[in-house]
Image (tube, rainbow, N blue to C red; front, side):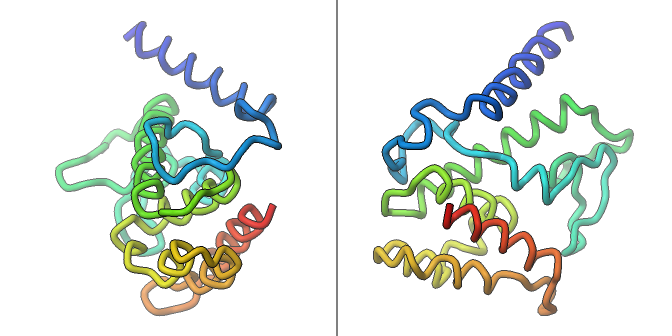
Length: 179
């Protein structure tokens, strides 16, 4: 149990470092390639903002059982007593790494860090399966970077109905993409 605490403490220190000093390379760093082994160069600010932290299971907007920072429970996964903040952080890291790998797998053009982080939130929120065949990815992979903001704005529906919350989340992704 002591090692788990130390790992969580190290992860927290890493998050604090990234929030204060930013990622290595600074604002003028070269764009990130769309693939590679290092999936640590992203911001998790949007996921934390829009998912919030829930230590008990709750239904997300689509009705899926969710816990922590928007972790969608998988078949056989259950937390009847809830989870700790440390467990929520660990689930978030795994989910973000999965989403980052999906962005790198599906995007074939170079991205800046903010562009990558904006798409990371979109993939995290919707899942790679939903966005893999999207017009957004087709246009982006054809080099049409300017189409991304308007395409992101189209993904604000839940169950066929417009969602003010998703519209606001997409607006944050668009602002990050454009920054």
